[in-house]
Length: 270
Image (cartoon, rainbow, N blue to C red; front, side, top):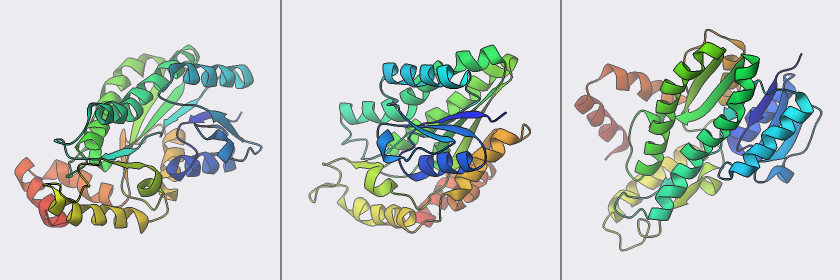
């Protein structure tokens, strides 16, 4: 029997690749996004409207899946974006929106799916996190904080779901060649203004990150990691995928706090 999967943020980038790859490998995939019409429905790939900031939208999507399939075996929390802003410039609205999608949206969706997994005493929850959930970079404090929160949710949720045979994992993604810069990055106006006191930092650092994403590798390894987590019960709790993740995550464990900070400063010329 084919497993039933819900993927959030599936209209483009990693979410789209994950959805297509799993459906091509025999999974029944409900590809949730606010732009469901941008995905073409196929035999095993079913676009579905889902806005992680709206509880009613999530409830309706989950209810539709249960009505159609009778269960949800896997949840992939992929929806997210990045706020480019200094802490000094970030507005109340920007701060809330960053966490509303990346953290609260993940919690809302997980909250709606878990009762069905708990009843079946089976399930897998996979959160698409980032290597920036384990380290900081300038101008990305809000995004960093949201991904640190995702990592913390995984740590705690695993204990809650343990009695019900529901596994919870995190994929700590590196930088991949997606449309994240174009569609997944929101810039604070004050931070990027020509008269910003942080102009020198912005001018130096933003092109480094933008180029790393625009010229980055294909995100196929993320999709393959999702499939491996679903199929291998002995896989690690946190799975770093991509050059930056595979380099910095182990290094963060190995070095002292000060030594690691020096390494980051040297790497990025900060």
